Image 1: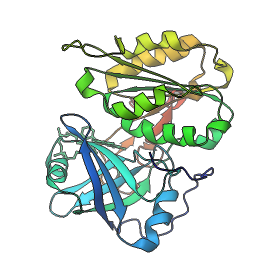
Image 2: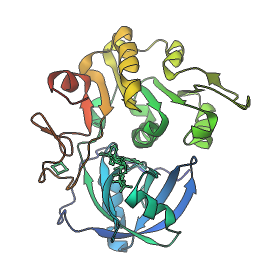
Image 3: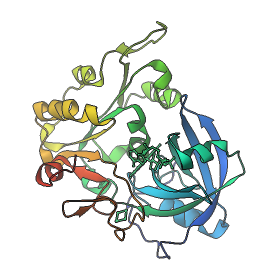
Image 4: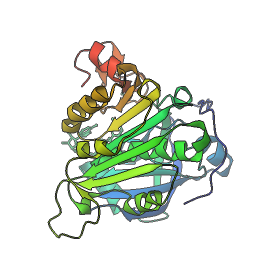
Length: 293
Ligand SMILES: Cc1cc2nc3c(=O)[nH]c(=O)nc-3n(C[C@H](O)[C@H](O)[C@H](O)COP(=O)(O)OP(=O)(O)OC[C@H]3O[C@@H](n4cnc5c(N)ncnc54)[C@H](O)[C@@H]3O)c2cc1C
Ligand code: FES
């Protein structure tokens, strides 16, 4: 893992034409699973590298494009506490992502952003943190998780519960195994099923991992969930049963997006633009805005 730097206030200060994409080079890539690939990219203009990679919030996304293949939003998987590069975890599903998977290290992509509200990390200072991720949901959560670990003294107890369908679908397994060694943080991994019988951790859906969550101050806990839609209902039920309030339950939601900055209307739900009012919402938002989830 890269050395951390002191980034506390994640205020976005960049003032540039938000339509203009910036060229970036793929400096590293590897497969996380069969269809999800990790990309580490570096802005080509050396004068912009630090400005871009320190001025974003965990939970924000970038619009990534490739000429003649399209443009789409992707969560930033890296943390501004580890600047110099942006990292993404991308599932191959269609035209743009298919083209991206054909690219090699040193090839170029184009980035606009950052967009979205991100997690209100400063509001979480002093709180216990309970992260729950499923499958590809580990991608946006990795940014806020690394941020919290790099500012560990600012938070209370920290739990990370992660579930995937099978061991082959676990994202960032090596990083999680490193985290399992830490004594200032609890990380629990589970898979729904283990056909090969080699999985050394728990088996069961991610909600079974709530048995490990002990002694959190429920009145002072921020709970964050990200994963496949089917997971939300059950995880949120667990948060509520623990006694965590709706305002302290955060989730990131995906909608189809085009401009990423509140101009095209593609992502509108009710009176909210998912690209600027989201993609991070509280459970209170979700309950008060129709059709948000
Ligand atoms: C805020 C945000 C953050 C995202 N972060 C990530 C990320 O970190 N990693 C990642 O792999 N993907 C992420 N996505 C989804 C990603 O943007 C889409 O997978 C991408 O647009 C697919 O582009 P494509 O040209 O390859 O696929 P297309 O050829 O456009 O579509 C292929 C299939 O994917 C479906 N699809 C396209 N966009 C979405 C979407 N937004 N949600 C659900 N289904 C979609 C289409 O309906 C179609 O069935 C995010 C989306 C949003 C809105
Ligand atoms: S993506 Fe254009 S308004 Fe949100």
